[in-house]
Length: 158
Image (cartoon, rainbow, N blue to C red; front, side, top):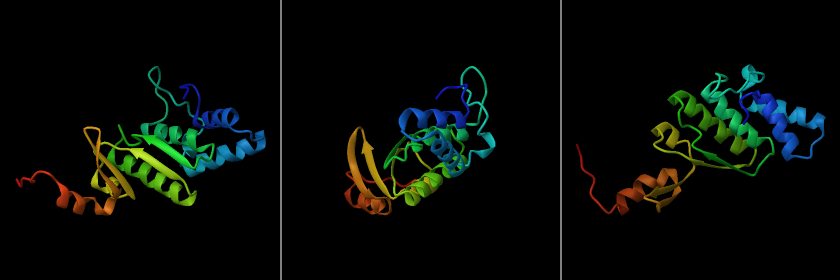
């Protein structure tokens, strides 16, 4: 994303670059994505970056997500969408992604490091890795039982 662009300009740029929509349809799509991501208050504010302050971290994450959503993907890959965010904003981002997945029949794949239990429980399925090796894949609600029954070492109680 370009620091000097606003979220609105970024979405318009992405739509013109990556879709064959008419200018009228692009404007509809841009407004739709801005509303879905709750970016109305910062839609015309420059994104900013290292050289100058722009929108907040949460707004920047949602803008990055919107840049990809503008094409109506069936699969959306999010690399650490909660990193560097406070716990409330991080939870809001994950809840927004879950809502988008359900409402738009979209698969969303996220890499998350050390999520809070509240964020962890928002996910439906989990692929758990340790040292690059898969140790669990399946529903989030079944991971505790799986690990309890298949863990190769004993858990210590403190």
